[in-house]
Image (cartoon, rainbow, N blue to C red; front, side):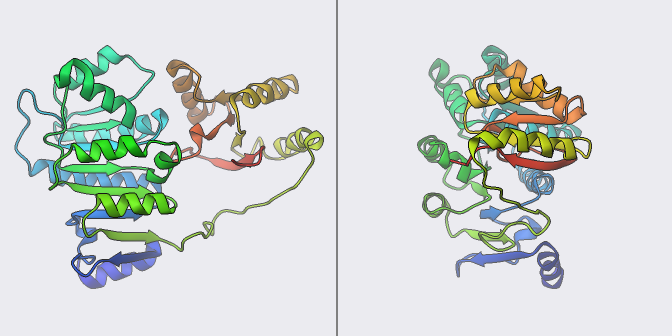
Length: 322
């Protein structure tokens, strides 16, 4: 892209780019960056952009041989997000004969080991399960020696969940000459320190303004006592249920189950999703929501970031957020 085209594209997306004097911000959309710290709002466009850059990078590398680990590594905080990223980018890599393997907890460990042993150019993973894979069988399953393209998705959420030590461990065990892309929706001090420590002369691309709500989202706040919340929720569901999909967030698994029972008693067909559910149930719940079998999902923070839900019309924070 020419500098003029880059300027127009940034203006269309409301992008602001910050770069150190030694960094080249003008080449970012030609996918020539070495280190990126990216605030993004459109998850589908983000996946496509990262996929295009990673494809180009991997095709420029030597082919994998027996015993090699992945060239591209994408980390995400939750199983659901790992599955979504994998499904979203796999179609692009299959066309070029590249293998992409998802690695996350709650699924068949032996099957994931088998897939990794076959060799894969890209691994999409949760950080804890990837560390388990690296430590299994004295490191014979896979390794990070060939990782030259690292993506850390939802970095702020990972840090908030207490996974910063695992992130740093994986970063420290990859090659120092790798390309790194760090993506986050917010920039708390802990994430900024992680970015500065992990990225060399990073280019920062910011979409919109910090701490400003997306202009396409209308937020309403109602302060109600505990004994009035459920009746008000029924009123809202009666008004919105037929318009599209609805997410209801609560603070605990117990509250999730209790609210599910109460809504079912009032003839509202709904589903629940939280971390303690087994993987098969979690996958079935996401599938039913995406296919429209059920339009109401009660969930905890496990579904708070990154999931792409088509026709989502309403998000309700039933409990005060932690």
